[in-house]
Length: 295
Ligand code: NAP
Image (cartoon, rainbow, N blue to C red; front, top):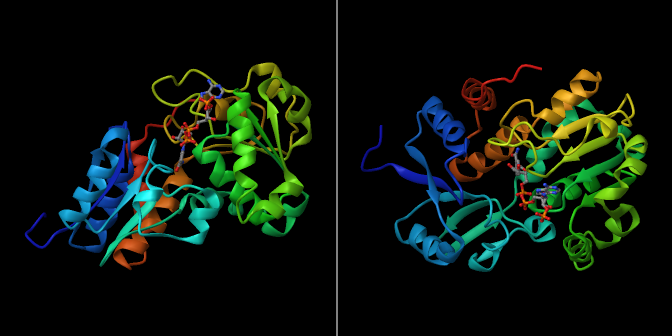
C-alpha cells in the first residue's frame, strides 16, 4: 500500500511501457514488506536533465536508467563508480545528500547465467562473438574481459560506429586487456567467424517484441555454429527469441535475457534498499508475466 511514508524508486527511459522492471521490483518490495514503490517514467532525451533534477527535488531514492539515457546521464551525476566509468554507461542511480551517484549492474546481470553454464576456470580458452556494438555490447565486452576470454570479436553494420566502439576502449582502464583480445568486424565477415567461437551473444534488438519473427542470423549462418557453442540473446521478450529457437533446434545451449534482467535488477535493489533481494520471487514474477514461445 502506498502511504505518506512510501519512498519512491523508478526507471527512466524512452520508450518505457515495455519495461518489466516495475513488475520485478514491486513484487520484491511487496514480498519483503518494504515501504517503497517502483514507477516507470518516460523521459525523452531533451528532458533528461530537467527530469533528473526533478527526481531529486521530489526525494526519489534511486532509479534505473535504460535506453537511450545510459551514457547521457553520466555528466548529470555527482559521482560515478570507477566500474561504470570503465564501461562508459550507468544503469543504476541513487541519491546522496548532495547529488546523485551512479553505477552499472548490467555486467553482473550478464555474467550471472553464464557462470551457471560454463565453469569460470575454463573461460581463458573461450572465444566470444558479439552481435552489435551499442550500449549493452559494452557490458558484454567488460563481462567477458573480466572472465579472461581469449578473444572477443564484435560485429556491427555501421563502420563508423564500430570504429567509435573500438576507439572508446583506448581511453578506458581496460585498454591494456582489451587491446590484446578485442577486434571489430563488418557484418559481412560473420560466416568466417561463426565456426570458430564458443559463445555468441546477440546485443542487437533484432527479434525483440514486436518484430519477433526476425533473427540476426540466417539458417545458413546458424548451420556454421560449432555444436558445443552457447547462444546467448540479451532480449527477454519474447522468450525464447527466434535466434534462440533456431539454436535450440540445432541442440545448442541457449540463454535468454531474463536472468540478466533479474540479476541487474537484484543488484540495484540491494543498493537502494540495503536488503538482500528475493531473487527467486523476482524470477517467478518475470516468468509469469512473459508467455513462453513454442519452439
Ligand atoms: P543500442 O545501444 O541501441 O544498441 C543496439 C545495437 O544493435 C547497435 O549496435 C545497433 O546498430 C545494432 N542493431 C540494431 N538493429 C540492427 C540490425 N537490424 N542489424 C544489425 N545491427 C543492428 O541498444 P542496447 O541498449 O545495447 O540494447 C540492445 C538490446 O539488448 C535490446 O534488445 C535490449 O532490450 C537488450 N538488453 C537487455 C538487457 C537485459 O537485462 N536482458 C539489458 C540491456 C539491453 P546501429 O547503431 O547501427 O543501429
